[in-house]
Image (cartoon, rainbow, N blue to C red; front, side, top):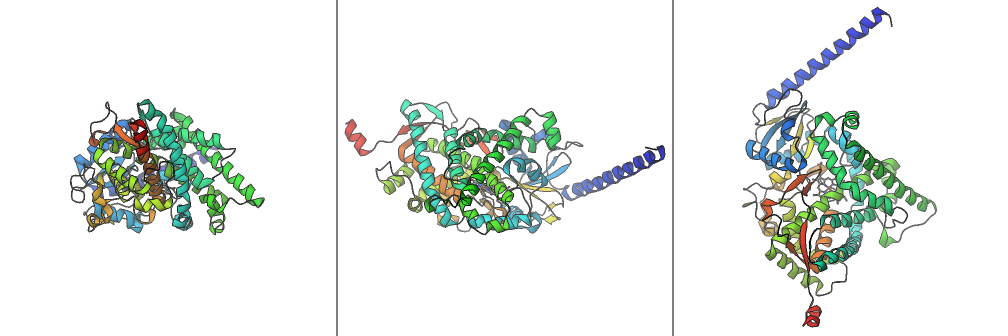
Length: 512
Ligand code: HEM
């Protein structure tokens, strides 16, 4: 290159860099000015307050609790060069969930979560999101979900068989891996295919590593220096696991999808009673809206979205039950009134409406331990919140259900497990955005009904057979359960409990 050309190129690059820096400085200055009244931890140049939150996941939860007890219901948090505003006032949360200026996810969802979760509903933005959401929610229709309850019931019976071995040995053990397997097995069967012949190994391997992947994704979110995929690959020892999970999930979904397409080509249709979500999608208009690649991405999303969230909710639920004998015995009474002493019949769809108390307990569990600990939105224009604070354009708004659900005003004595908070008469007049385990608005959880049905079927199946007792060496109360934060909130030591088989009248007579 001639010296003159080199000079011109250097000059041009320098001008562009200076212009970029000036633009950035102007934007940051604007963010500073608009958010100066919002309290938050001190921030340093370049890294912001990253060191305040870049903690080990076991310590991160306490750190987040410290944030909202110290700074209140609106918090300013600088992470690297970005400004995050955390909101927990229900009126602000309503704007967060419903404002068109907050309908999209920030870019970190696409760059860090999409490789694992898939470029599906959770990570894509409008107008693509709107089109996909229409198709996916149609295929999550109640009539379709009804058919899944039998799968939940049967997988739960298998779960009970595995748990029985520990119960018979009279030992405290960690239920979480068994719950995870049951949840993931049910998800694969209902979302992808009832017939997993030939791909069981891939499925089981995926289930094994699912937790690690969710942990790694969250680990990155709080470390701006790992946001670039290249730097993450170069600098972090965790990249290898991450890359193998991404690859494993993609190839598993591709394999199942290809098997289905091959069967369709051969004119083989699964029995109507054994249709999975994918069968419904392939038989619907969805194929005209979504390409094959898009369908595969949505399948990955559904499986990931349902996996740790449901498993961890169940984990917290059973720990809570082990500490609340009175609540548990009310559930037992309800189960006995529905199933009698028959312990062999799997739970089916018609049983679910009769399990009202159980449902309230699940809802209260989700209030106290909402597994999605926070979610975020990109702010596409300045938004003035009802609390008076301004969300500046191009920043990120975040809400934290765990904190929202502990508002004394709407949930008096919030650390008390009280299922009757969800009696219809006690919900009247409650601010609708003060209970958001499944989020709310246009980006709420599309699997909410699926999740409630599967959790009801699984908890009913386990509690029909067992009484859950606490680990004598474990936490002393619900406030004391150690929590680790990954993509979802996890009980740090898993759901460690002791199970005691419930005896039927026949057992008692035989034993007498
Ligand atoms: C207890 C279980 C579950 C909880 C607590 C939960 C919670 C949530 C939350 C809070 C969101 C919003 C996330 C955000 O805005 O970033 C969400 C979104 C989503 N969930 Fe769930 N979820 C659960 C189970 C499921 C299940 C079983 C499925 C699928 C079978 C599922 C599929 C999805 C999808 C696809 C989205 C993205 C929706 C969209 O943006 O249009 N979830 N979930």
